[in-house]
Image 1 (cartoon, rainbow, N blue to C red):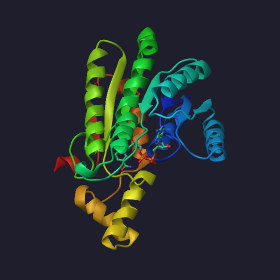
Image 2: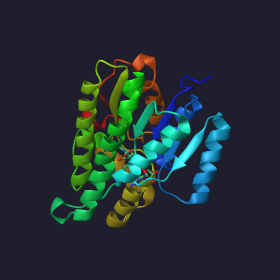
Image 3: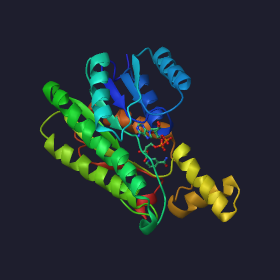
Image 4: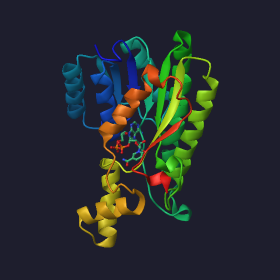
Length: 262
Ligand code: NAD
């Protein structure tokens, strides 16, 4: 019996990267799952079957676009119908775009705010009533070091992630006298497709080999000079779901190799 058997979790953006590692960590502890995110149908079907058979949990998939409130609402209804309830909500789906603020495409700004911030508002407002009715819940928002400090050319991402940290604090206060907690995790660089794109762009821009571009990326921000692993973030989510974490409320927990200690 895993520590989370009998619990049901929704993890947004869990077909890749950090979200997939979080889904895997929750399944390993016995939680039933709704996974979400984009990707090729056969790959997603295989992923769903793998998670279910490896960990003996129920896994359902919903391809809702986190930029669309109507699709988010349908996903929450889908998860509740298929899993019976939602005990754990992990808002992880996120996108990035890099440009100076005066050149930032308006549609990219709107998309980043929708997926990285507003989606969490919608999932939380839709899931909280049932968590309150059972007086138990765990909400974990995957923010970023960029939820605490800024970098150039990331106006939308930094604004959305700071907003997500703010939303986390408000939800934590509004649920403070319940057995529901809401916290944010603020990772530094994690080697996922989202960061690969930035490494490739940097390598092309500065005429570097990929390995050199990786080292340059880390050297600029992350004192450990090592990437955070998706699995470490999965473990932190599992800890936040434990009873030992019941008084961690409204925190923005860094897991960033020292990035924000500077
Ligand atoms: P990723 O690109 O590997 O995965 C993103 C996931 O979100 C994918 O499953 C993708 O299909 C899904 N997704 C994207 N747009 C979506 C949409 N509109 N609707 C539904 N799903 C959507 O990225 P990642 O690096 O694993 O990032 C996951 C989260 O962690 C993001 O919120 C990101 O901002 C955050 N984060 C990442 C890093 C890093 O270094 N990789 C650092 C700090 C924070």
